[in-house]
Each structure stands twice: as C-alpha cells, then as structure tokens.
Amino acid sequence: MSKKPAKQRFEVQENETIDDCLKRMQNEGYMPTRRFEQPVFKEEKKNGKIEPVYLRQKIIFEGKLQ
Image (cartoon, helix red, strand yellow):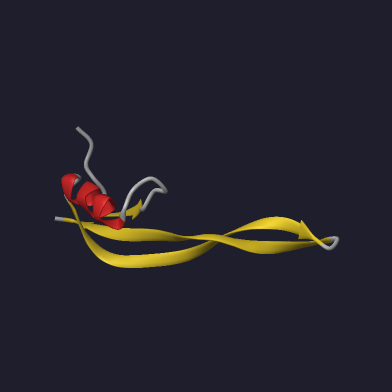
C-alpha cells in the first residue's frame, strides 16, 4: 500500500460543483487549506491579430491530509 502525500491539489472539474470537489477531497482523506483561482483563456484571431479570450475560471483547492 502506498503512502498518501501530506498535501495534494484538487481541481474543480468542468462537470462538478465546488461542493462535489470538496466531498471528493474528504472521501480521499484531505481537508481544504487553500483555494487558488486562475483564469483560462483561448486564443482567437480577430482583425488579423491573435487575442486572448476569457473562457472560464479554474478553481484549485490544496488539501492537507487529515
């Protein structure tokens, strides 16, 4: 049996809610200690220029082993 890391990051997937992610963390034995948010962009060509276009916000929780 392998030992679990003391800290692990959990990303909220596109098909789940924040609550679902927190429950998944708890089921794996982790308690949330930190929340990160990062914007996700895609590149689109507009008027001959490539410009970043906002898609969504990526949410990541850092969990500490209980």
